[in-house]
Image (cartoon, rainbow, N blue to C red; front, top):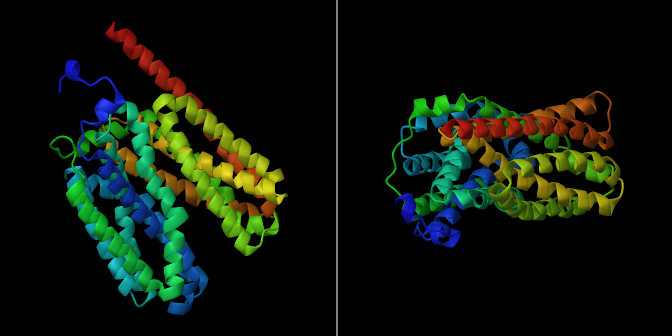
Length: 409
């Protein structure tokens, strides 16, 4: 379609892609099942320890190794898959994902289960990236932020709904049932992608060399650094949020579950907020939310001592955390427009690297003698480091855009 024929309203542009709503729902389900497969393992650890007759730290290594494979191998798998059209790549990844979870369901020992989990982890970053990029290609530029928010909502739903449901299935019917269920759901998503996800134009396979060159832009590195630092700040506290709520705020075990559900509710609202900010004022929204994250974490040092203020703070953290996801993903895509799939995959690795770094920082703080009560201000200091990074990157982007505009005149 030529520029002169372009529709003038978002509603008209949306009509250009038949079945777009159904396709976005399928891509959301894709991220839901991938996220559930990662987060459900935390809830299954006690049962796995008893079932496999191994100590908790040994089975806990399944979580650590999964995150490491996602962080390190994810970009490499993405590079290998760039030769395929994105829809076909997603189908291949979902097929491997189903196989990995079927192997996990059948595993009789820790070694076999670890191998199955590593196979599943290989698909994680690339499936996330391909699903997001397909959603973006099916959406007008003016609505890109909201499309990213819709698809990444699947990730939030995995933590709020998928992982708890998977844990419940494991408790009631055995851990194998959880992996059978994930395999079945992933198979259904694979079929839905085959039928419903139809990009608006014939796809060409991305060019690996072009995507690698696009990733060499300094702005891309800066955005990835923002992701790592912001996530590290959040997870310095969030990794230990359950014991903090019990020991500092005085919540019972059942009440902690309810309070963490508030985080999930906040995440739903945050997704909507993040999508709107991404489409309207991405850099201003990002800097504002990063500042708010540091401020709320710092306030948590005080609010954690009173139950109702602690619960309110967790709710607000859910809003901010979820709102940051589409903003950070959009800024990553904007920083490397020639490398949409690779930069999205590496940003997923950056999120995991931040999680690992924050968990390590929080654990180290406790080891050196700080108390759970002190973790929020440590987290606030870490998260605050992302604010000047974001401000500097925004300024650099504005200068580059102004220079390019002047050169065109």
